[in-house]
Image (cartoon, rainbow, N blue to C red; front, side, top):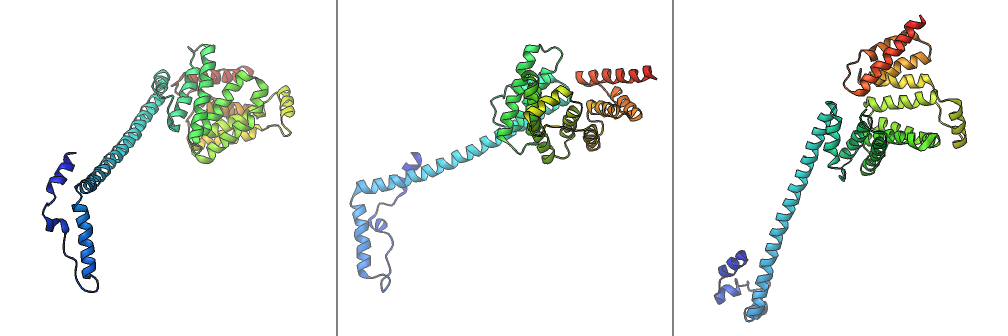
Length: 317
């Protein structure tokens, strides 16, 4: 309003000023045109109410434009601050994950469970699943956490279908909840799980974890017992199947992408060679798994299993 008052006071009040500059005479500016312009100007000046309304409209239009600019700039700043905030949270989450701080990571990300950001959601799915795997987690809480993880992964995928990590963790979580829904449901979801692992690898061929998980899928169906194969035949015209050779190919591919990235990949290389009756290479990979630095509870469990398998070799020899 102060701006409006300044505009009002600065306007010239003399008649000549109100009428404005003279129009040129001649073909382009006849006497009739000049008179017509002066008459219209006089109509406005002769009606103070109309003049004031016209001036007020102009001032308010200017103020509205200024307000729009301020709001637009504020929206841009807010959006930029929001992006920065998400990036900051992701950095904290990745640091806690690399440090093996499962509880702290879950507590951090749980604050943002209503987020619409796919990167936050798939990390929360991973954190929920990791918390479920802790030895101190009760069976009841473990089940709740795994279903919670599936919901977060599903939302992440809905928000961004181009996220390789969302595809990967959605497949992992579907597999996890299958343990509570029976063997029929687990087998029925087999192709869905495979599809999402393959999509994750397609989107990011350098992700060793997705390649490793595809290897586990093959290993699982290669060693499927006869009664589960019968169920699979009832569910599918062409039931899911694989071989140890196919599984071995994925485990080696994962190792080539990122050597020694995961103790379980080393263990499964050893176990797959055992299935293929190659004790020499089985011993090599199982020894690597046993000697792998233990950063997590899973690493410790894998060390124990690898040591037991190697001891079994020694007893038989």
